[in-house]
Length: 174
Picture 1 (cartoon, one colour):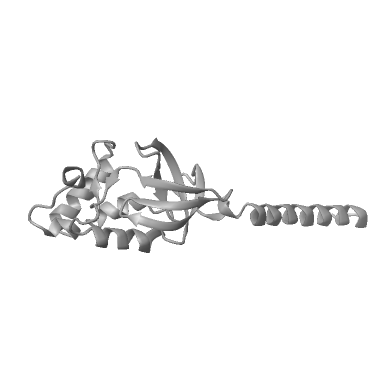
Picture 2 (spheres, one colour; picture 1 turned 135 degrees about the horizontal axis):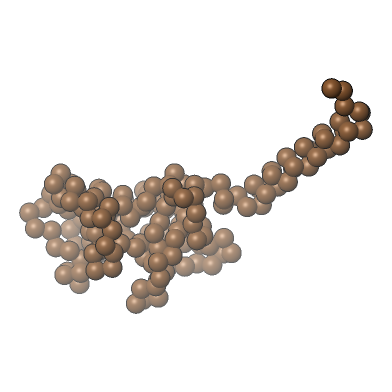
């Protein structure tokens, strides 16, 4: 089958236009290129500016607002508690100065946005903090069986603060 020269040019022109539109969409909305969780969705994206401790940080939204966040479902050692520095350092290594996807879970009593956090590879950051024994599963606010299993595994392997005989949860320390 032979196409007329005019039809051929129309098809090529349409393909170039589609490719240009896709490329323009990618450039203008680059935050969509980050896979954030298994469903590929996030409420929004932030660039992490500063990590306060093992469960909270400040981020900048795509519209340049600075917002304080608290990670949902975990509670990390308080400043002055054993492993507080290690917990903060781990969170810094996981998210500081990086673009992350967040899913809103509400607000805490201090007005911080409580969020589930995902890195660029889709890793759940709260789960990673628990897995490494540097955050507790905060069952008062979350009943996730995944988080509870991660805490049980970390405790059994005696990693992070679970290496201590009787680590004190931050909600009791406060």
